[in-house]
Amino acid sequence: MRRAWLFALLVIPLLVTACAPGTEAGIAAPTFTVLQSGTGFRSVDPPGVGAGDAVFDVRLRATNPNPIGFTLASLDGDFFLGGHPAATTTFRHGIELPAHGSSDLTLEIRVPLAQAPALLQTLAGLLTGASTSYRVDATVGVRVFGAVRRFPRATLAQGSVRWSPAWVAPRIQLASSGPSLHVDSLTRVTVQIAATLYNPASLGYVVQAPTVHLAFAGTPVATAQLGRVVAPAGATVPVDLTFSFNPLQVGPALAAQISAVASGAGSLAFGVSGPLVLEAPGLATHHVDAAALLSGTLR
Image (cartoon, rainbow, N blue to C red; front, side, top):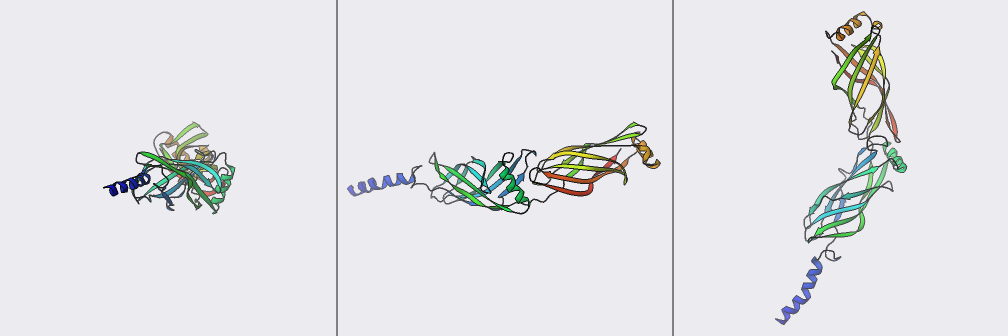
């Protein structure tokens, strides 16, 4: 009996030390592995476009090396891009990590760009095909035995990334309100076209068209300009085009069709075409050759 009592006296403190939260010897910090698929820029909106930030996702696999399960409670740290401090990151979603098990998570990091000329230079280089480094340093908190254990700050993720988004021209479609034709006078007709512009790219830009052409049944009748249209990455924004021309100068047959449409007795196919200028402020500018932009029917 005396031997059993001595054994318990020696072993129980060791078990308590091994299991108590917050003890260095008791709980090892989770480890993190970067998952390349899903890590990188999701979108970039330069200053003056949308929120003026870049969204960078870091996809991680967290692994629990301990024989007991716990909850990954928090990550608090800093994100570095090209060696420059770029943003802070916080994670509070509470992911369960079973004993000797793993779970995946994504850090969504928003990098403000308006006051970061060094970051703009880095992004401009990426647009030309260069690569840059990234790093996440953070403190990690786990919930175990009802308490949160925080581990010293460490590097959770690092690597290099390339981001060469193709310059994708916007897609312009007629709005539900459709186009309208107004006869202002004998020598002036106005065509108003309400449309939407969708930017399918991961890079936000400003769209301009110095000259766009309106044609009826393939016959050019008027020109206009498309002013600065701010199109964040993946966003749809409204645009309006207004064309005015003299119907007496388009030929008698076309003038008769225009008159019929104005009186509600006919229809007329139209198309809008022209070159576009896409500008990512502070990063780059891209020119799109003249092409068909949208088409429809006036009724």
